[in-house]
Length: 140
Image (cartoon, rainbow, N blue to C red; front, side, top):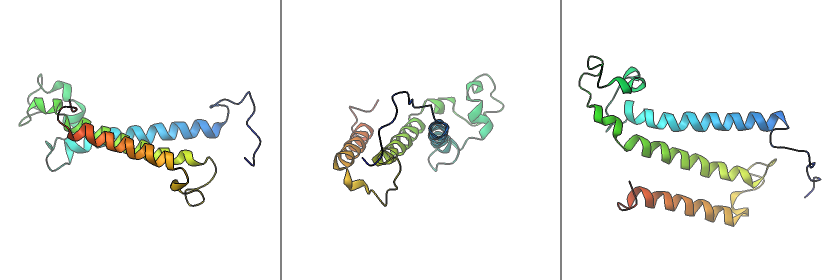
């Protein structure tokens, strides 16, 4: 309340700073989400341990069996990588919600418990996410 209100002509993209923040946010959320799915396919202990080529050319699995020797093409329909990607996306967005506490102060100056409703909403969102993951009738 110490600053005057923004001008009526102010838009979200009227300042370069806001535009760059939006682009950065979109980029790191996208890379983290896709990276989580790729991690399951390539690195996870219970994953298929595909190469980057196999992952990036997965549509050729049936038509090009030489490059997919030993790979069951049905692995590309497995729900585990999509679940990993969704969980990373939900977690990032819940942490990002904490950024909405203040536009120009850090979390040290304005800690999360100053907005109990936000903490409750984050808790409810994470609880619903876990319910969807672990209750069989709700998971698809």
